[in-house]
Length: 247
Image (tube, rainbow, N blue to C red; front, side, top):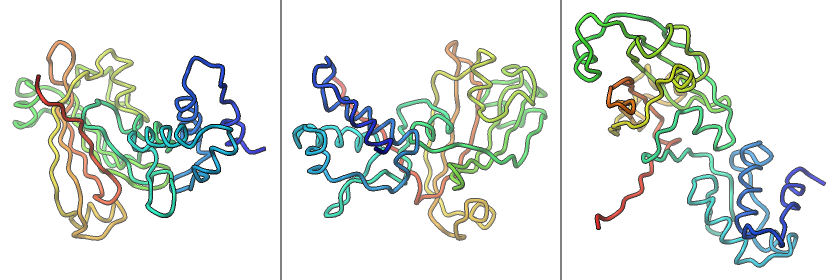
């Protein structure tokens, strides 16, 4: 019996949790633990329903929920597959590492630059710092598994971290450990064409479509702490926002 079959075999019709939610949880775990990898096909809905002894409506509801989360994609006439593109929810303040782990990908970084310096006029304005204030700059190439996903340039007010070297794998983990993780942010999304340097780092071609996300992160007390610019390949990322009409 495969690990996927074991996960799916744990559905309990006597549980207080609906069967479709149990199935969602099992499939989500299979994706997060890489039992199902990017672009892997799921068994057909008919097959899943027959194997699990549940209705196709239950299977359909479970899959629809994972499609909405961005974990699965439905291809007309072909079936359901683990998504290879990354859906980034603009309404949730999460780190790159958290986004990748939630989709069963392994995040890692290659350092391009790690340095301390004095704040520039633009940084001082946006971070509300005095001229001459110390900041830490972290420039990284971000990977999901072995695929380059983003070039990230981040400036952090130096008072927010114990040292420049405090950041290892995850900037937000380091900020959280220091008690200074942002709780809200303003983000701006720009479409652009990748230049030669960006394309080389992202394994794309010069002039390919790209996305620039600028973020200004704030602490609960309203102090700005994080200023970042992240460049993404346009063919690997989708940015999603939930919109609600005012009452």
